[in-house]
Amino acid sequence: MELSHQHRRFLLVSQCGFQTVFNFVENGLIAWLIHGSSNTVAIWNRFGGIILDILLTGFFLPFLICIIISPIVAGQVRSGKVPPLPPEQFPHWRWFRRSFWIRGLILGIAGVIFGALPLVSALILGQAQSFPMVSYVMFKAIWAAMLASLVAPIIGWWALANASRKLLGASGRELQQGAF
Image 1 (spheres, rainbow, N blue to C red):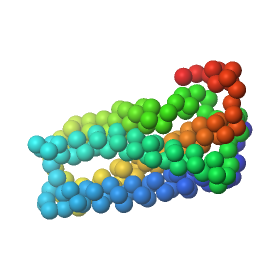
Image 2 (image 1 turned 60 degrees about the horizontal axis):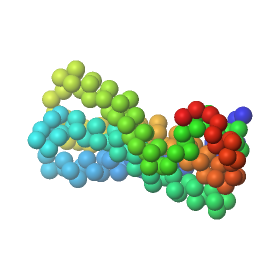
Image 3 (image 1 turned 135 degrees about the vertical axis):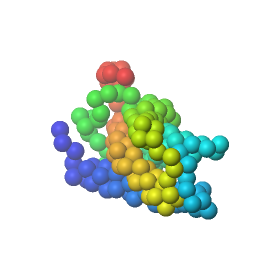
Image 4 (image 1 turned 45 degrees about the horizontal axis):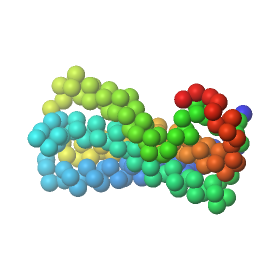
């Protein structure tokens, strides 16, 4: 079954669009504040450098989006601002029912494995040395925006499904069915 227009708009605009723009600005600003006094940003230095920053962003961006957005989405569903999903539109894997802390932790680990590590590997294999500060700020802003655009709609869908399930009152048998 296809998502309703209102749910698609919620996931694409409220979740994906907003998070993409917000994380572009926020991560660019943070990179500027941290490295603004430097001419270049090293790939690796005693404070970690670009590699550590990419790994930390890969984990904390999905984790923080999940723990911040999930309670907000639940409140929007409870208040009626966002209609609940019908059960047939819930994700097939049932682990969206886990706490948002667990979902955030799993997505943070996935962000490191599937996002940050390939990017770090490319920088190492390409023998990157350092970035000019302005180039690094743009790189960091774009990297964070891309990661947010990938994880925010998934986080929003899982949060919407979890809140809808609670609101609609799933039966005990239904809760035990399905995959992890």
